[in-house]
Image 1: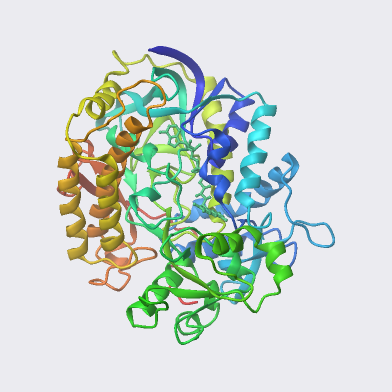
Image 2: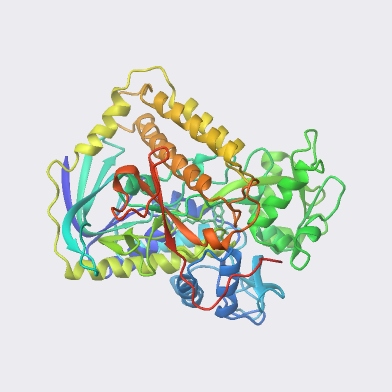
Length: 600
Ligand SMILES: Cc1cc2nc3c(=O)[nH]c(=O)nc-3n(C[C@H](O)[C@H](O)[C@H](O)COP(=O)(O)OP(=O)(O)OC[C@H]3O[C@@H](n4cnc5c(N)ncnc54)[C@H](O)[C@@H]3O)c2cc1C
């Protein structure tokens, strides 16, 4: 085992991690640990755009953007955080422009902007052009630009280092009301070097989690194979709560049967959803902004069309995305990649044929709770000094119960930057915390469980069954019965997980072993999501309970905070454990918008 010492360690080299690294690297000694080579991170797959109220092509301002974000999130958004994001959006785009990002331009040479779901002019009057973009490969451009700038600033990368544990110590502290408690403080992280199979401990004054999402708990997903929620899982196991995990976004337009994403930019450029009768059905569900309603509403409307028998195809199980009225030259200029996906994966020619689509699991609104400075919360009132989180792994919460398209590329830039600055500034004043004795012990045990299990169960089989039950029971529509079914299934998967068989016994590039570890994270997170969904007996944003179809502000206008059984706050505020998870709540921050009924 080797020990390294850095002021700041950043876990993840996607958009959030690298945006943080650019700031931190100029202020403090910084290392970025990433399980993927940086430019393979999922940010590079992002397609449609990154929004900011630049008002380059029509009137717009950050206040409208704030309102849309809050309404889009069905009022579960922390309004102070949404204000920060919408205000800082403008600089976030200009920062990237100065770093060299080749945005699409207007004829006058300004950054061009296009429409996206839920982004409106003057509080919902009509769609507004707010998304800055580089064709339909905006994320690719962001990731490459950030990486080049990290190289320019000599950021040190440890590529294909899997972080598997967070090291903290507990110190005696006293709350404002005089009650004593144990406060966690960061000491570092433990990582596994894929190439050698060796463990590396990184002692650090600050740790930033920027490890991305957890879409692989579902079968039909737009997410890459690697999005297994490691950061959320690690934090949860170490006693950090997870916020709003019941809210998972299903993006309306995944290629039917595959889940590969067709960006909302298609509808932003004018594409239309149709059912088997050729009807533009979104006119019924969202008369004002139709196909450009927020994703939760469009996804649910599509699923409803299919349920009511107006689905297309031999099994009537998808709807159609129609681009045939758009000029081929326009499609080629604005949507080249995604139309190619339709040709390659479905054999459909979007110039002349509508494309089969159905909702696909896309984005985790929940995650590691932070305040607007990106400091991680240990409970509602206390931060963990030295620990930060940003990007999809975090819940700040700017997306509430449903994220608007293009707000995530924005989130990773705004809060990634904030995290990099905050972590480096903290490291300037703080001392290193002594590493716990045998810092690698927990990780060795984790790996040994996977390595030495000589059972017969296959990791891939358990993962598939987990994804199947999540798709069947935790997707767009949920009920207590379906959720209890998931919990029952997970219990049996976890039992089988103790009897897995990892065939590769070697040390080098043992992906077999790491997939087993990743499955452990997926099982843990699926359990947390399902318990939180069971508890929320209302429908809001991406969480729709058929047995409780209305939003219930009186009971549920609050964030859920899921704690691992032994780590819940001692003040009695957390519920009894279900499946090892205890739920508490956290108030939503309101600044200027009262919750209203959401109509579009
Ligand atoms: C297909 C697709 C299209 C999208 N299009 C858009 C869009 O147009 N606009 C928009 O706003 N949003 C879009 N999104 C969402 C957005 O791209 C993501 O939410 C965002 O890029 C996440 O960035 P991130 O930096 O948090 O994580 P990621 O980019 O996923 O990076 C995660 C990083 O963490 C590292 N990591 C993970 N686990 C570990 C570990 N255990 N140890 C070490 N490192 C680890 C990985 O190596 C990686 O570097 C899209 C998402 C998808 C999937």
